[in-house]
Picture 1 (cartoon, one colour):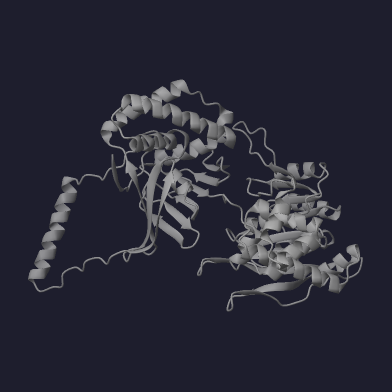
Picture 2 (picture 1 turned 30 degrees about the vertical axis):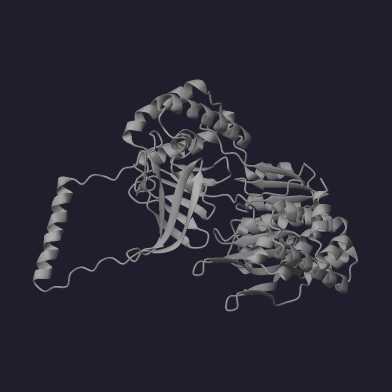
Length: 560
């Protein structure tokens, strides 16, 4: 067994065996001609070609994925326009491949895999444990002289090839990556790094059939098919990661596979404040809005962090209310003690039957007596109409929308194809806008605006009042206007005065800043502290002010 930097990834149907390609006679001849030309140029007094500059290492770290050690180097290469993500992991010699084929056949006969075992995450873990145990036993029988570490590496490789996505499993376990993209077998895999942005890797999939095999395997696990007749597929992994696949010739360069990784640890409001994405004052204002059942739409461009912000804000929902979430792909994660029913849509089967749409789920959710409804995304007119009907029948609704500013979000909502009339739209109180600055590779809350209905009963108009706005020159989210509608609604339904509301905002900001200072960023812990504040605001605030971390954690963890 050797360890080397790989430049090819093997098909899903074969064991991982990556080799450097041998040089053909034609390539040897071209190389020799280039060498001679270089020598002739030097003899004629011409400047010899400069030696390539050394690569600068930006970051390097090691992962161990199912006992397979993998070394990652992210380097700035003078000959490349983007940094290089270099992955190095052990490969298998040809002599070992035949033995592994026999091991694979033995495992298949010993372990029967049921469809539900690759859908349920708990079943998947049990299946992996049984597979690992059987594989280790058979490898030791066929290859008794191998060291323990080599046996573990072979078991991990078999596990990735048989139950996973081959070398893609290493990318999937790198917490620094947000996106994994295969454009074709002719180009390397690309990844999106959370801090650095797009990176080109040194791994290339061997052929187009291998990309198809990966896509087909993902589809089978969720009851979908990708074929020449249906060359487009949206699906998800058991981890919740979203996947999209296309087949040639729809994607003319070759088969593609895009995996958007699901956050293993959901973002919380403390993460947003600590990263500078959101100020503690703006976070306190949104907390107040959620507490008093304001309806909010989170707008933003692709991958700007809309769903992450929506997920963070749901931590502020009181624990005595029922929550129904509706999504195409499960992304929302709420604290485990909340009264929450998550629901997802279902595509039709190959015969075109069994589809469950978002509209059907939204209509059904209104019959489940929800206090709060979380909708993954507003896309079509009928879905938006049902959602705003829910808003106007007393349900608090939160959703996301593709729009770059609050003004653009308003125009999208009131014009075709969504086309919501102002009479219904007036039930929406706020729009928060996420922004992704690609130059600096940062995400920021760009605007928090409220919708203020004006006019009489005959003709209702809606005006936007921007309360918070991000200033790029200072990289700060600042308050530029006072809230009018939100404050009036809270005073109308609670009897609070302006002074009461301002005092409450200050207290909420104190608690958020305390959680940031003490690195309380677990979704369950943040949710418990918020819920404990609802139960005993004076006790929690007093503990925050005296810095009594143990009291707060003890009080919060003591509840179920």
